[in-house]
Length: 289
Image (cartoon, rainbow, N blue to C red; front, side):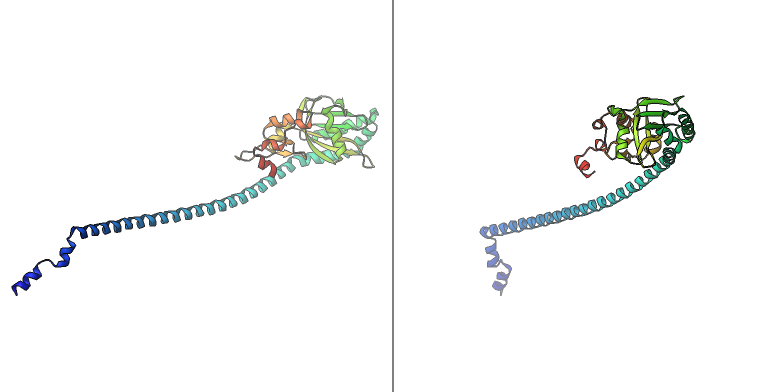
């Protein structure tokens, strides 16, 4: 019995073999491999999680950017339409009354009679009295009349004591507006022009004067002070917004920077005028416009 008890208290043959340096080396190598695989799996798992997180974040940012761009584009379009309607109403409120008076002046029988009988002193006197009556009601107290047959140009402003007279010729670049207006044959138009005789820049409302057959026999209208016109019409206090007026050729007719308008009013060649494309920097934006 003693021998049996002693045999149980001692190490088993299996344990003795495991303590063998050879087996101990194998077990150590297995433990290292297991620890290494565990670290690799953990690193791979973390990497996959990070990649998925980055992809989700990029997709979320892309969706938000597209949505924000769409919303801002619609808002900008709506705001532009609203601003355009506001400016249109401001133009109408500023020009409508002057245009109405100019249309009445161009349709006045005494004015037409004078144009057809320009050398008649009595008719001329009555016509000038009638024009002076109109001038009192024009906002800036300025009128003009140009006769097609003779090329004579008559004008009176607050700065002139008497009616100023000059001659228009087709060869003079400064007089191109007159012959172009007759050729276009539109009932009325708006023009920014530097008048050499008056030595000032004004916004002119040009109205065709027609005879009983509908033939244009002259042009009449009024002139508005350019500075006051720009201040009333396109002066803006809202940042990022610039209101401009252009003609059918794209040339600037009204802009907050009076230097641009003065330049266009004073140059004689159409190619030298500043147009709307001058204000746009990006070529693709010019193409869109």
